[in-house]
Amino acid sequence: MKISVFTSALLALLTLLSCESKPSLQKYFVENTDNKDFIALDVSPSILNLDKAKLSAAQTEALNSFDKMNILAFKANATNQTAFETERAKVKVILKDPKYQELMKFGSGKEGASISYVGTDENIEEFVVFVNRKENGFAVVRVLGKDMNPNNIMTLMSVLKQSKIDMEQLKPLQQLVK
Figure (tube, helix red, strand yellow):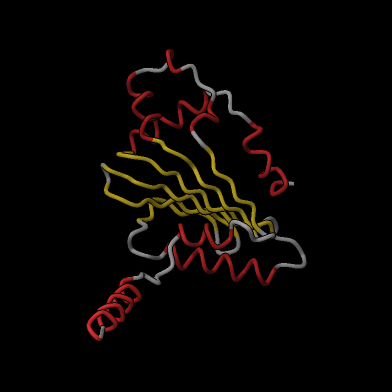
């Protein structure tokens, strides 16, 4: 009996110690999905409404590397400026983690955007786009996939131009842009 109590206590302690308490974008998305100041949206590749028979081999490969997109947007207004600053600061801290490698950054501290990625140059698991504007709020977009690379992303951008995007899936974001 003493051994099983000791073993149970040891297992519980090890479980608690092994839990990573470091903030991550995934945790941030989960924590804020139901928050009234945020708009959360998951977008699948089906939003593109493409005729796959007309795609080149490179375009098909690029499309197949893309799994989904998660969007979390904070809509700023006159009454939630303190919350806006707090939440924007949290995202910036998360994106300073060395696992997020910054590709580009433009704009000033009050408004701007950055593009980062997780993975290696030839095997990107996640692209992160962070845009913020004090008057409107901010948005974090996670583009998730398998074996993405910069060429796939550029090809995917060209595919977007010929797609017939299903705007119904993006309807919740319209209130952010207003």
